[in-house]
Image 1 (cartoon, rainbow, N blue to C red):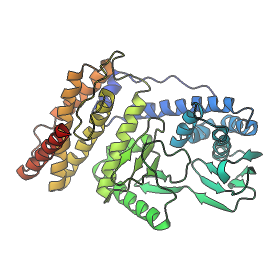
Image 2: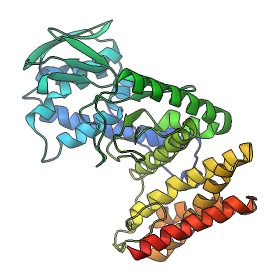
Image 3: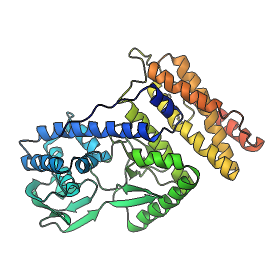
Image 4: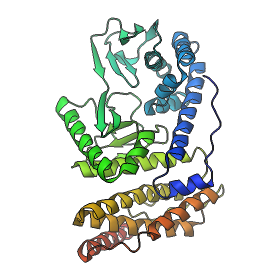
Length: 400
């Protein structure tokens, strides 16, 4: 891989991110840091696979030489990062290294490189990130050919394309194929049927229209920090992995507005994960206690508590804007609930004595953001329900 450039997140960048939003420059730096990480990780994997998959390593290097930007776009794909990290762990198998063929095919296609080479295929499938999966049951090896029309697998009976979702100007992958997408300690779905995929596409289009109309700053952020949606089988759950920057794992929410909020929530986790590449948020000798979180049933360590605060600050921002736009009771309830929850949890973080300088600066900026909302008026009914919900959650936690 070609050389990578130095990247810096300074104090002013932390202040921007602490608002829950962040300007284009700092978001571009966060993404560039993750792509740089992926480039280095895949370089290590290609080196480790030089004896098993030398042709794939050669094609990947040739693609990078031909079009570095296109190759980096492929290597920046969330599941490429998850795969590379897995390959560098003790749990990796020789079959994991064979996935380098699929990565090389995707990079060659993106770079416009013509290439043909033999490849081992694990489990009768060859996944090609950003494009899809070739099914080759009963085959141990195939011949991969990449031409102007894209990759072709000799002898394969079928091709499953990676579907796309459109959220306004944002295009996301609907990733129900990649063998390295399940990094969330939650069950992922298999291949979605056409009807369920169509529901995802319709809901995402409606969520994108809402974000474009009411929350354009979050849509701009997603254009840099969100690449794919991984459908989950667990109803009402969502997750993000530090190993797969740009992927949001979600069970499909009941309506497009909830989907928009879910995408905002998960991209915030992605942003904070990316920030951790530049700054530690906790002191090296931080206490290891666990603390109450208003959004969980289990106590959380300080790092996870900070993650929750950062994600739910953006959720409070989302519902605050919805309340300003619509004045409906649901938005008022959600805004009050998460504004109070984050405010109380930031106090817990301060009292934990776990924050390092960067973490403290982030927390102080989040608190300033909440303080700016203190004058916002919410109807008494939704406010009472929100406070009662928080009190009931805390009581249930105390009784557990």
